[in-house]
Length: 428
Image (cartoon, rainbow, N blue to C red):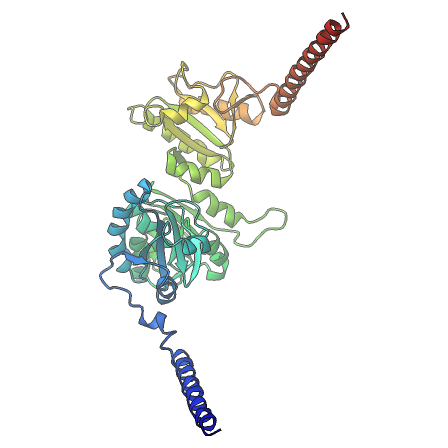
């Protein structure tokens, strides 16, 4: 009995000590020793690319307002080519007034992270805005990467209070995107479009400005929304209406959407995506060589036509510049320049008698082409094929179906003959 009585206090003491340890651990967690990861995570100030893993990834996301992450695999060739571009861009992005931290994760090794952020290919680039992720699909060249990411962290609409602020805004924006400056335009008028087209253009309103700015941006009254495309040295002005008009939609948004592209678009891999996003049909002029001495004059004619036909986009491409693309419009053996209307998808139209631009008055020829297009004197063709789509896609599918049925009938008819022959032999 005495031994048993001695064991009971010892057991109680042991349980008491265990309880103290548990309470101490809980206290540590509650006080932040086990949950202080975001505060303890330090962003390096040298602008180097961070190497993150499952132990510190969430802490980095919480610690950085803006985080750009490359989910890569060590064996991926595209990832290897991207790495030096990120190394070059990282210190520039870290030095912005609104810094962006660049990081990378070996998603082939840390597959839980890859699965969490739905990484299904390498490299996958994600931009975290205060912890909210979105996939980045823009250019990966260091300079273009900086331009695109700098745009993502900018305000939807910048408010400019002076001529000096306007000049600073234009200089900081660079030439990568179109700019919209609302002189005397209330911020609320363009806030919706500033958010909607944030990835494609810079937006601002100028509250206070001098007459010098009216001369520089070529407007004589306000409110006025000035569109500037520094890359193509183009500028235009919209005087209103700024409100949505019943049954007519928003003239303001039409102006913004059309100003995202230059009047005449040089077709390349970068502008091709913009054309498809735009939604309008493209009056496409195919040249032999864009650098030919006669090409600038023709492009000038196309620009004039674009000014009068805002429901269409006018583009041009040289066979020498992009042979693979031009061949899909049946240019092999054709005399150039050639002009067509392309839906940016699978079909294009040629105007009978006006497909080729002869030497001479290009202005009149382009006008006749547009007149023929408006009147419907066109023949539709499929991109990648030279023959007209006179039957249409549905008829082609029906023809294929009929051939398949005929083949099936012939097959089963042959099977019937095969079955009959053994029977006759057996009967004999």
